[in-house]
Image (cartoon, rainbow over all chains, first blue to last red; front, side, top):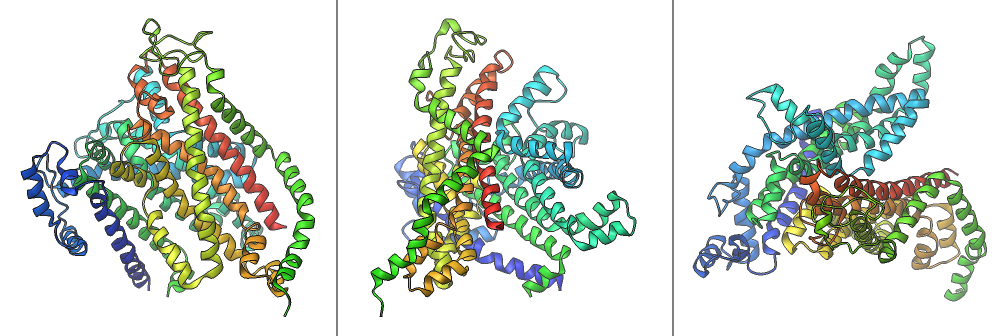
Length: 316
Length: 298
């Protein structure tokens, strides 16, 4: 039953993916001027522009051009970088691990801060509530790139504890990798922790009023066991929804944070592509980030299905 | 058959009679909420500074005094100077002017487009709802900052493009929120009552459904203005928003990042300014949310 729910959910995403592919296809077509000229840049010779027009089949009807492009994309062919002659899919895949690691670390960190703090705020009130409200307002108001710059100033330049830029792959050294990733992950995760704390507090407060929590307390369970065994489990759906949404958004946020800390991820590649007006690379990276965004949504829905049988039944 | 004009007058009379009293009540509730008060005050003060920028600053924002490069804060340069000897305070105030302009000019058009679309989608449902909402769902499926970066890549790094891309980010969200509110009130008793006494669908929508659906939209608009400022600052920070030498809070951070050890004031003050103005919008929106929620509970 769960597998069929996930498959149905994935099938529902296909129209959205197709619509998104049309939007990405038109990124190059909607650029003012000739798409071939846009791809090759202003200094391209008329001969190379003509050759590019031929390669892109720009004289064919637009629907045929789209279907040909989609066919290639489905087979993993996103075109090539006309400056370096490198396949775009290879460029993206080599940068993917950095962005995935940054996103996952930021998500884990925000959950590690927000779930305990939000639960405490709901159950105890007092300083925990004040702390969660303060973190909530500051977290969503501080620009994350500025926070990154302040972290570099404090922890790298003044204290010299952590490196301010660069990346070491996990396969080379776990310790050095984490030393390079800790500041970017905290920077990206802190604003998400703010929203998640608030969601957790709200969800826990709502669950605390339910009769089975009173029953658990009446049985003599201590507050910690009530929270972990009864309250959190039943407050999980809104919390998981927000974690899922934020994991998706952090893929966008990574574009800026990777730039602040000079991390060689998809985000920085996208930004370099935009600054260089490298349209095939922009198309490839936008497509990949948006696909990952949709996949995160599917995984979030699958977790909903696991947590709550009513979701599976409703979908049925 | 009753005359349409008569029906319309009858259906709006009770609302019109209560209007000043209702407005006074809303005003009182707004002033009693500390978050609305503090947030509103922050936004108002910053708006006043932004509008009166030439009067409150002593130096032109783009004028570089090379004998004052990277000077620490003084009585003449409250926030110190940057790597080109420009007054950081003047640049912050003029940068706030751009931030406020982006906030209002991106969100207000999104509301202006989202309100009619959301009203129609929520009130009509069915095919019309699908025709309006499905294309907008596509826009929501892109991470916001990525959508803005892509549009800037396509149409150029101009402030007008940044504002237009932010409007495109907010418009589907405003539409969705208003549609949700309309769905929740369109079968309410007071709407049924208006229909029963013969008010036309247009009048029911505009006089009864719309005023009772606006609360969540106003909350979102306030919070969206803060996020717009953050996104514009992020885009300027990576070189895709306001272009130098024009002062933008995000751009100032990028320009001064290399001197931050020698002149920390050149990155600290622009960042704090962004934080304060966004905090103002967030506090205001959050306070409004409390008021809207308490009204709904009652």
